[in-house]
Length: 333
Image (cartoon, rainbow, N blue to C red; front, side):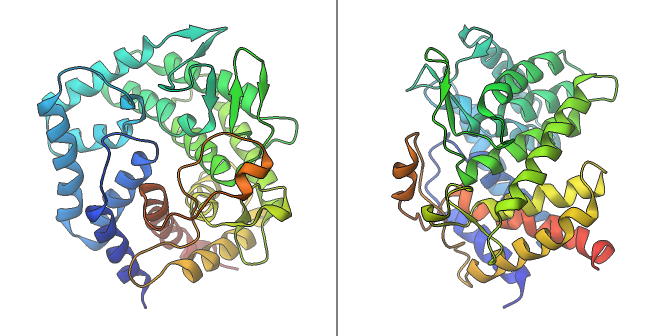
């Protein structure tokens, strides 16, 4: 089956998904649909995302639980695509609300259920949104984006250059688990924040250096099937397929933009892409992706069940497909 048909099938799966409005992973679900709309020339998938965002904006009364997880960068793109000033204004207010989150020891505390925890997941949506808003709307949010990003990176990333899943701000310790999808969330957030930072921002080089170190470290643990283990440096933790599309999507862009060296990653990109194709089914389901994952010890991650459909499962392979097919013709050996 052609990849383009799998993209179409996965996009259809996402349109049937019961979106919580909002929750973790919605950003890559929306981004997958936006990519599918562009690749397939099917406006309906873009319209679907806009319909959800516009319905939320029109019915808005007050900020509620999990609104901090909304796909801000993607909704900002939709507001621009549909020339929707009301939706754009809501995104500016979202940035204001997010920046007023309580803080402890310099960290923004945004989790609705675990106030003491920082999650690697949030790196993927807070800073990319804030830096994009600063770039496109000429608003003063670059420093806020970096304040959401760099302190979290400093404590979640350990001496291995891999990211732990969580950090407790009161205990001053991580959960010491290098969760596979967490590396994907970190890569996504680092790259998309960097991409919106102007050259004059001195921390831009720091962000790209951290991204390069992460990408270079992660490939050391890639399996022969192109995927990674659930805990990337624990071979006993079992297969987790969600990191491969994140890696392909970000590594392709990072090679193209000179952040990482082509010769160090071309083989790993091809392996990951082949692995993606193997588990991506004809019905659009991207197999082998774990369910919603909380924080725990290594044993907890070994027991996480597979979830057949989610924004963080079906969105990333679509994104990876677009990045790979833009990258591959110029970069094959």
